[in-house]
Length: 204
Ligand SMILES: *[C@@H]1O[C@H](CO)[C@@H](O)[C@H](O)[C@H]1NC(C)=O
Image (cartoon, rainbow, N blue to C red):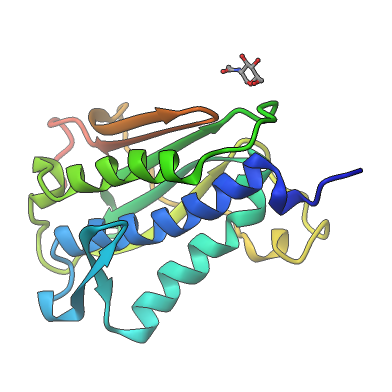
């Protein structure tokens, strides 16, 4: 009997991961201080204190963007999900990148408890990360960008049509990379790292 997609281990992981990304991205935005701290309220998630956006539009943007990735994460199409901060001239200053790798041939069922345990330790590392707590200059804006392994063809699904390509300005030189945290809990491997421009590129 064919299993429905959301009952496969990949579907199960994708659901936990999407929820995790929503919380983690909110924490990144909170820690970078783009909004006054009153824009967030403390919540508990997997027994870790996290932030939740109070502003409905902000909360919706993060929720809708990440939830929209679910069908693609499940199929292993999403390689990276980035939170990009731009200066007032629209040049990227920092990119916080969640890199995902999921073993698509893994067929055993997954203990959600184990996965949540790994994600929890991931989460608790964020608030003590130096790169995350370093404040940005004023007037920054930010957005979520997803990088696909292959582009879903337009017209194949209504979800695919929601994704548009971006014309984000590129840095002149390869970025510097600062690893923040990684975890591997078969069949999921997740890394968070920071990409920032070489010192020779003056952006501030
Ligand atoms: C993916 O999962 C399969 C089945 O459990 C396993 O045999 C294989 O080694 C895994 N591949 C990787 C790269 O971990």
